[in-house]
Length: 243
Image (cartoon, rainbow, N blue to C red; front, side, top):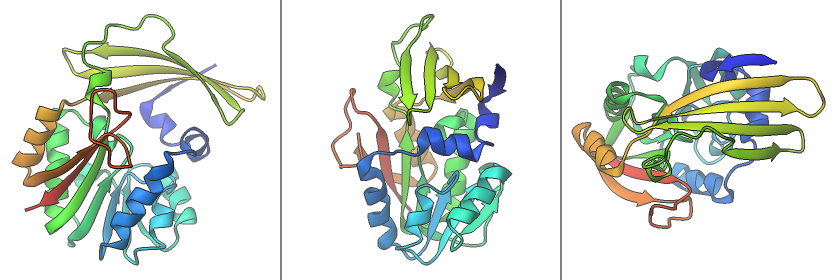
């Protein structure tokens, strides 16, 4: 059995694609519609390019910023038309502004409050006035009020290849949740245990951070079909406008 941390998982493109290969049917459609209306696009944390590669078909100027070198290599293979920059977003300082900036799949939940605000300031710096910033975050209601999960929280079979068990702990005081993930590869090749931690943010906090960063919240949705965000929503998607 191999013990891994959060970052190690994001350095394994093949495993990442196995776990996140299937996405919400409306996800790609939603991002493609926004990208097709924009002159250029900055994509934060594209991973292996599962979404970014298709956006290159509707936008001629796509830039992705990815911290993991292994992910960058895979993303460049999947999206040769895009410019993929191997860099921590916290160090980003491009001499360019974009019509559209995208932070997908709980990207912002990786950052503590100080970093969260810094990332938003960096987004504002790279977003044209009137441009759109889209962020997908963890639904905070899935965390708030939850108690320590000492027993198995979920079981999932991925592509008939990987049996995944998750044990989740919520810390409401620190506004974090930690997922201890056990992955058993049914072909017997591997047995991994990965510890992954995120921060979660409530809607009042999100609106405050966005506002102080120069971003005006326009739309808040609970899924990629534009349904209004509610407590049981599967996702939290925020569209904001640069000022």
